[in-house]
Structure formats: structure tokens, C-alpha cells
Image (cartoon, rainbow, N blue to C red; front, top):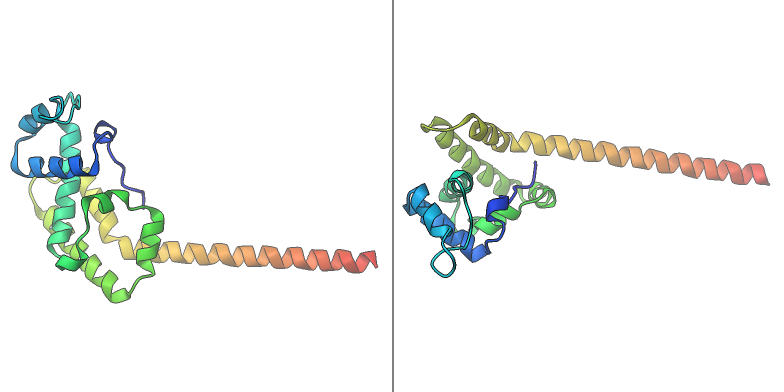
Length: 173
């Protein structure tokens, strides 16, 4: 799974700014929010957005996070900054976590995926992202199998090197 990327147009925003932007998008229209964030600080964020596309992309991410969090207990909710910073090592850590916790999280993801897939206006790109989320356990299992295969190959290569070194030592005597 790829690391979620922070959009270049919004990269200059701090974590607090991103939370404020998420709130603006939850309650406002794209053009109004774009006009506001393009204003210089302190009224806005000092951005120079030519279109609402970065806002739409960011809001889609926020919406997905909101749907996932709506199905998680308060103590397990994911923050926006955490969601945006997930990397492969974090996902590998989650895979090794308690299976019951993972099952709860995956259930929340599947519920959010089902809701989004059945809503009007879902784009093909969003459906592809949803498929990736829904396939998470299968993908995790494949990554674990691939990792085991690589470890086995490394072990075999090391054993060959040790045998070759031992043979070279015997031949030298």
C-alpha cells in the first residue's frame, strides 16, 4: 500500500491549519473555502489555489477518515495527521497487532467502503481506493508471505556462503 501523499498545493499547511481546513470543508462550499484559504494570513492561509481540485481531493480524504472514525470507538479513532502519515512500516505494525483489533478496524473500513460505494457521486478513482481498503487483509497476507520467502532466500544464500567458505578452508589445508 502506498503512503498517502500530502497534496503539493496544501503542503505548506501546518497540522492545525489542515484541521481547520477540514472543518471549513465540512461546513462550506468549495469556492467559498478556496477564496478564504487564498487570503493572506491571518484571514486565510496564504495559499494560491487556482481551482477547487486540491480541496476536493483533501475533502475526499477527510470524508473517508470521518466514515472510518464513525465506526470506531472513541479510544481508537484515527487523527487526520496520523491518517496522512501512515507508511508501510505502520501498516506492517498494524498487521502484527492483535487480530481482534485488526478485525474491528477492518470491519469499520468495510462498512465505510460499502457506504461510499453506494453513495451518489463516487468516482472510479474513489472506487479503486475503496477496493484497496477492502482488500487490505488479503494484501497484508501476501506481503507477509513475500517477506517470509525473502527471509528464506537470504537464509539459503547465507548457508551457501558458509558452505563455500568451509570448503575453501578445507581445500586450503
